[in-house]
Length: 194
Image (cartoon, rainbow, N blue to C red; front, side, top):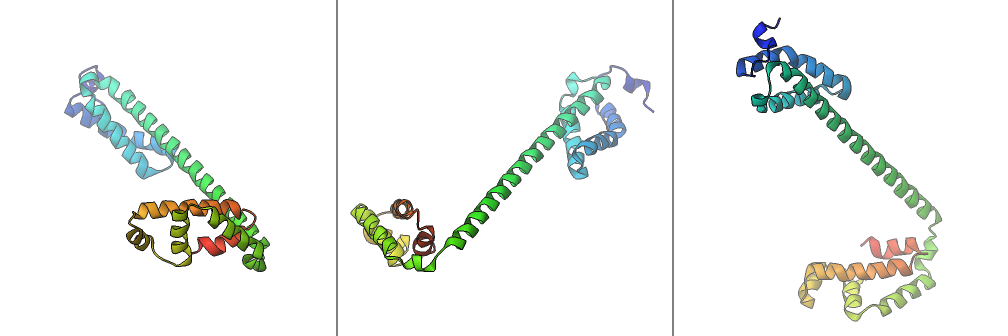
């Protein structure tokens, strides 16, 4: 039972705060749990709300404390639920993206013709694409993909940086991916797996 001292518009002091904390803590936790359905999170929200309300004690009276604190609890629950909603959407998007990638891999593998991996036409496309590359790009790509040299080794021997080597290989891969768009399995088999 609240004393008359705590029901008045008296300023909020430590004794009044402790009393109100004891009266409302469990009620506010039950309120939060009824919306967010996570007791540990609800307890955290309520404790953070009491701390936030206490930090405004100079502007709060005893009678204003409970509604003010419950408003903070409500807003923190809304923020928590919105964050959960975002996480749920992201998880759904990732799952959907994963499903699309899986379907693409299955369909690509289903139509993969092992003979095509060694096709003369695809080989000619590779040679034509590599011949069209700038000399430096072609040299770095060939050293990386056909000779198996590391980016670090290529960088040291060509007097450049590892980042520069990565850029040149990426540039060549982009050109090959475009040229071999009809030979995806060929591209993956010969260039992506190394």
